[in-house]
Image (cartoon, rainbow, N blue to C red; front, top):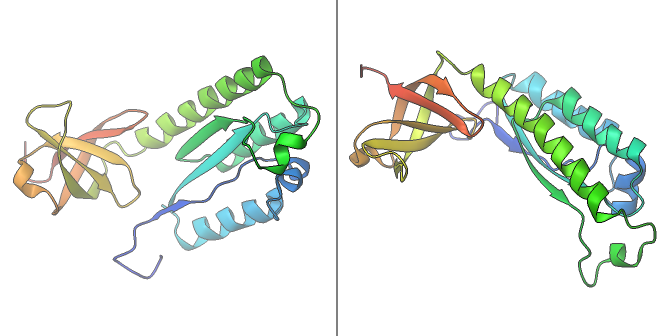
Amino acid sequence: MRDSPTVCEHLHLPIQSGDDRVLARMGRGYTYAHYRSLIAAAREWIPHIAISTDVMVGFPGETEEQFRHTRSAFEEIRFDQAFMFKYNDRPGTAATQMPDKVPEDVKQQRLEELVVLQNGIGREINRQQLGQTSEVLVEGPDPKSPGKIRGRTRTNKLMIFPGDERLTGQLVQVRANKAYLWGCVGQASGES
């Protein structure tokens, strides 16, 4: 990734949980320390890399302390984006037979807490893009903003900016002017 100009600087690496005992019950085969070392290595090699993840709260037997480990992992790692879910039984999986199911209201509370934390982190990270110019691959017109087009930066951030849909498929340099949870609004270089 570091040495190839055709590979973008975004890594999706599911954490699933920040607690080793939960990870073991999930059958993940790694520890939080190992996961954290992968993230540290990626950031050492590519300092501006964006990291996204998947996480599941309320896995059978997850204690409040174990959930706090996941919350601490989010605070420590500071993901650019996270896909967050609460555990639900899936037919045919070993977890459906596990005892100590976490009550629905507890799973919902944990999910909401983690979403609030991650949304704050995501907004802070996106605000750091203000004033920065990024290479954007134009995807096409923005369906919610007439006269604007949208695309993705090399770190997989959504960028919306004024432009012609004939730029679809092209790379454009865009300066971020406003930051949101979902990405940025900007202006193409050379435009006023």
